[in-house]
Length: 165
Image 1: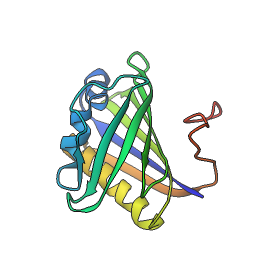
Image 2: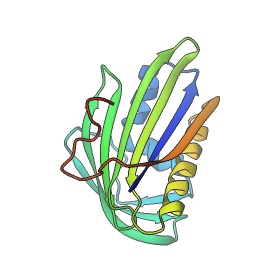
Image 3: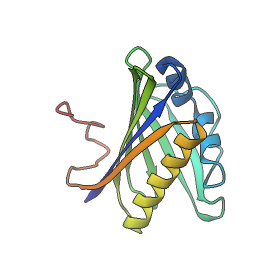
Image 4: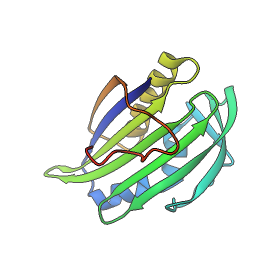
């Protein structure tokens, strides 16, 4: 089984400005603060089809393990980004970001499906907490979250999200 995490962050800035932040690793690195440390992850613009190796540590101390992040797709005109992350404590994590315009500015929608791996409830709640902190770092004026059990397959050979989504 896997866990599905939805997070919506509401912002007063234009969606293109927000997507520029979303598609750059420096936003994830800085937004995580001391909660998650990414060693050797470059603070660069993401490129579709590229893979990036990193060493990840919770609170900069615990669970130091290696993994990699693959950017499956990145579309600036649609303001969408899909990635897959592999680490030892979470076998596979699929992350989709979509940024849309609203009357007040923009909304950043995160959808994360993770194969729970070891310590399932801790990993899911920790992922939600880190994403909440990232939205606070970006000055979201409102954040909504939901965390549910998902019965869909999370395999490297499957599409990130199915067409019916």
